[in-house]
Length: 150
Image (cartoon, rainbow, N blue to C red; front, top):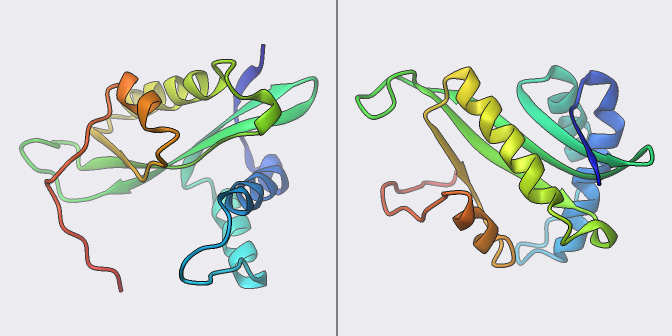
């Protein structure tokens, strides 16, 4: 069974590698995006700053999975009185280690951390493969917002 722990700045290289591995596994994007040196640098900078929280799963000293929760503070609203919201990203478990409950455990850990910090909402972009797990954890679809990509 994987050991679960919070990542620190010393894990920046591992986290960057896992992010690139996950993006590679998703396959070519319709928009033709390919991670370049600037993307890798920005990714490393994000992990090094520690603006969010990342949970790692490790077996035998090897990182087998991860999840990052990015925090965003907005003006408080009646339904979100702290104004702290989370955006779940980089949910990834390497293929040989899937279907062992690792994704659930790292997600439960990061969700509990979000509660502890006072976040009132977590959003995510889900693949079809992951939707059933997210639903089991209480995530639901939303027609609540619109988005403008800049």
